[in-house]
Amino acid sequence: MPKPAVVVDANSRSPVADFTLPATGGADFTLYPIRSKSLVIYFYPKDSTPGCSTEAQQFRDLYARYLKVGCEIVGVSRDSIKSHENFRSKFTLPFALLSDEDEVACNLFGVIKPKMMYGKKVRGIERSTFVLDDKGIIRKEWRGPKADGHAQEVLEFVQTI
Image (tube, rainbow, N blue to C red; front, top):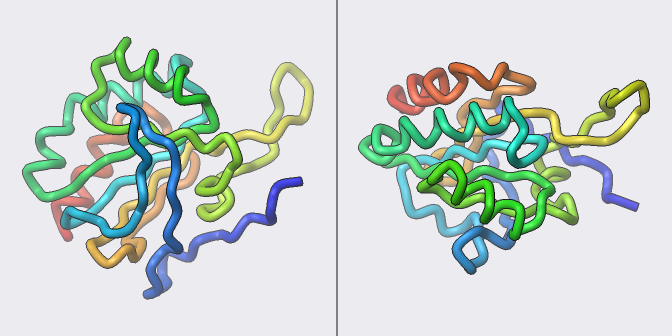
């Protein structure tokens, strides 16, 4: 039974709780210490699906511009590391993908939602993005954005902090 979601309040001045997840490239990702000015954590439903592929490619295409303003990006889904490695390789993604099979970060950020799939109710990740500052405080969040154009919108916000 998964733990109840702790919905992160974007108006809070408290840092997000630390977590560690397996990441592509054979390493673990630990939230703290954040080594950049800001961090984009984007949650997506599933590797290699049309919307998730579009979103990942657009973050990839803008990645150098994110780095230029001191911002790192990580993508998170419940897919396995093997699936993530294939997805990352297929689209030449320069940033890490984190495997949250136990829904640790998903529950922390409150992104697991009931969905309808082929007429059946299922639990899944609601496409969501969070921008954290260098102290781990959420500066902005997006819930359920359209994949196309979202990476540009996030970049425009990151450039203001």
